[in-house]
Length: 328
Image 1: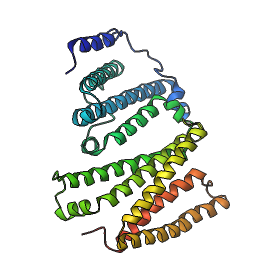
Image 2: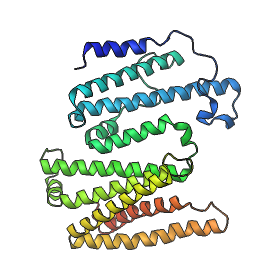
Image 3: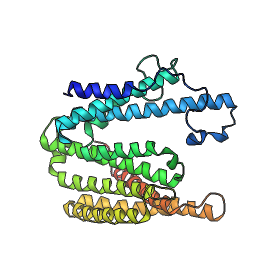
Image 4: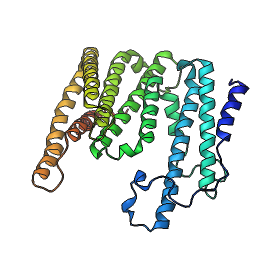
């Protein structure tokens, strides 16, 4: 438990803020921060929208800090010592209370209680807290905090970089989720009701783990490259170093997965490769031809890499579906 002196210290720091002062009837944050200058709204409407955007930012921090507290309460013993964990959770709760007070100060009509207007906690949030391993969870949270903390710089990152980073986060999440179920099957925790599925996960667990490592490394590679684009957070040298490490992991995990595969898995892998080539030729080639004729913008280098990975996974589902392996 957090000591009373710690709680008093935290409460005192936030209580020192002059919460009773009226909220200015003007822009709370410079308008360009939310990129709303060209909205076509009148001055009063733009100020009102600016206040709502600030409320949304406050809700984002509340939501992410809820993630941290919920995760530490469930898995905290694996992440840090108890004393540090309790103090960290107390600080997060103090932050949440401060953001609630700020919301009530800005829009008391919208926030009379504890309900958020833009974000809510649902089953997918419970699943993320339950299933995501420690390292992947904190990578996701740190990335999210960094994005919100320097949101203005994010405006300089293009669509290709955002798409790559978004796909990378999705790959990390699903790799973490798959790893969780493999670990559950090995431990026999009983969360997998279908015994045949659990037995398959136990027998081929090493293959699945190598595949999920490959998927997670692929996701991290996209995130690193997405954050290293024009106006990004990473320097080209740092991004290149991270890319080389991740490519090495991809090669090692891919070779290990191939050696652990049986004949059916290797056949599916070859068919997936063939199908991926056809999809790239059809979709990527079609995009390139339309760009050459001036109908659409030409794909950026990162667009191609993102498309390769998307089509690789799409091809795997097509191959599995053709062999009726997606249904039992």
